[in-house]
Image 1 (tube, helix red, strand yellow):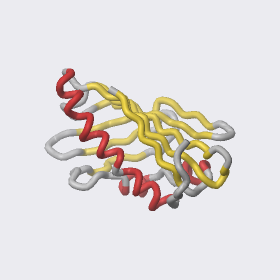
Image 2 (cartoon, helix red, strand yellow):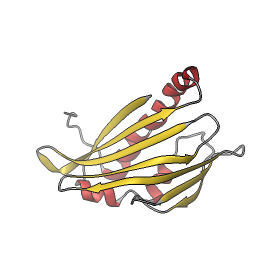
Image 3 (cartoon, one colour):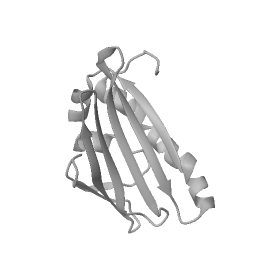
Length: 151
């Protein structure tokens, strides 16, 4: 299953990418999720993120792709070790220059995941979607909000 959430912020895309650090990662943690960050290498190919979700559940993701162009920075993390309820996980982060305004950016989270059965995959959708929708105000707090509509 896949979903995408895009947030417009008031910073150039390279400034936004530079802010993708440990502090932002911790701020993006949804409330009521007992997550402990054990390791955060960064956002480049080969970097790893290790989490403890409580109840003996670990999550290890590896950055498998990274690209930097004249108008976007993108990186993808793939789950190497996942909590029991997930079979696969891929999260593509795209930070692109907003068309017509170099001082604004679009942060796009594209999540592709699968559980061990179709029913659980579907049941996880609203939970995961809301956890990523939670990121919108956090991104705006870190990088500035804008009232311009998304294209």
